[in-house]
Length: 427
Image (tube, rainbow, N blue to C red; front, side, top):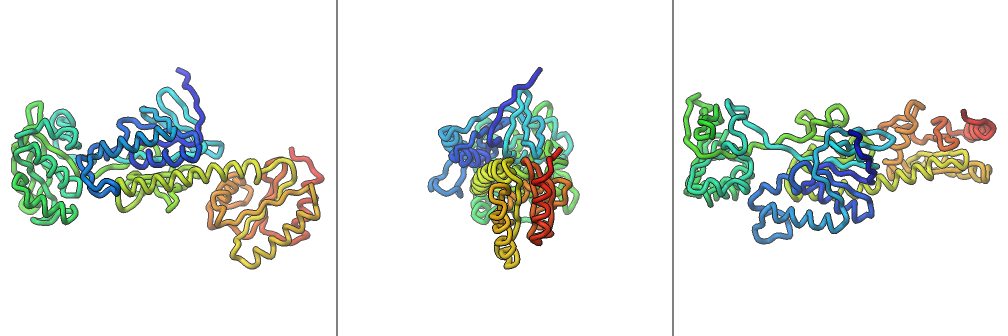
């Protein structure tokens, strides 16, 4: 089957809080923007029963309701949304390509906001009871089916304790397996105090899951005491796992810089090591993973994707112009010698009148232009990694092609090179 090709300014992979926010910013900047989401718009926030710490919602609000507002705003801005799974991605200086089962989407910039998936315990028999057979990851989705029943929660972080308290609205008993010593949890202090005071919650300290048991459907969780090694069988009607998430970066391995856990490395502008590719949200290597931080990431990624595209158009049509022999001067505006040489370059351009075009790049303000120039220079001596460029430097171009990179900036050297380019024809 031949796949259909479509062109976009920005393709965002992932439709959670970060992806939707990035989409809103990109579309508002008049960029043709596509969000690809493989399952449910809103991401993991749609599995959260109550969100109390997202600004603007003074009363407790559900994750699904908040995410619906995100979706509504993104669509109003003109963001296109496709619910499908990304199979492969290809990044290159000639553009980026995102491939699904039926389509190949070409993009000037890509924002990766793929989030994560629930971490499993890896206990015995776990695979047999996932999702509709007793092991769940979403209290909002599945709490009602455990009305007047007994459930277990694995974990002691904010999600585990808060979702455990939500489950007590339905279940008769919520048993919480905690890895730590008695009284120690990973959740915030307020949540801990409320949970310990909740008569429907029972805690099993110093335990982890040894196995899941049942006849077709989970009816027993076997816990192992980490201090004594003793096994304890706990009868349950269901079990909820809240022990963290694994970043969805499988298709990116070997293509982009990841940390040891698989999260994407970025700078504070959400830029990855690949020019024009950004990352935002829980998939990024960062400390705090909340809706609020995902929104911040998405906003920064969206703004910088727009700036990248603007810089790319400047680079293609102005920096690598074809009308004249090009003299690209790269310097640091805070360097006195660099400023002196800039005056020299401007005088040289005046001497050649209509034959030479000078373009000036401040390496710090125009970092993205430097990265593009580095990619375009390739093996012509210009370092691709910003920060290792010899400043100041000049890049000579002709017919929109880079000819040479040099740090020799004497007037005679520059003039001789320009004369040579003006008198020759590139093959």
